[in-house]
Length: 108
Image (cartoon, rainbow, N blue to C red):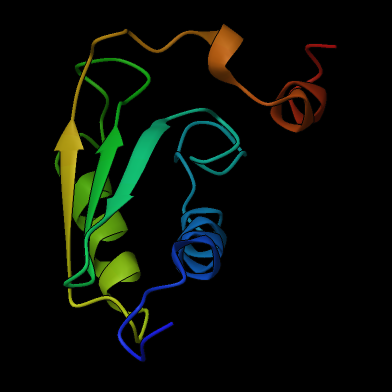
């Protein structure tokens, strides 16, 4: 195993921990537990791409939330760059929320 091999699991865990510090302003649950993060890609250059959605296309934080995600993920030492791509395919629904989030919001 060479020195340059990325342990994507370790980095992935760090990214998830950071994502769990970001909250949707209208819902007291972090964006990861809400199911807004669809995928996280890390390439060998330590560039991170995050595919995420918003609860609605006209979400009040549509402009600021992706920037917050990028900035916080870029703050991880190993990450060279971070880019967020917003998608509404598939559209977000409450089914994407974790059990923890549903419990937190009294939906279980």
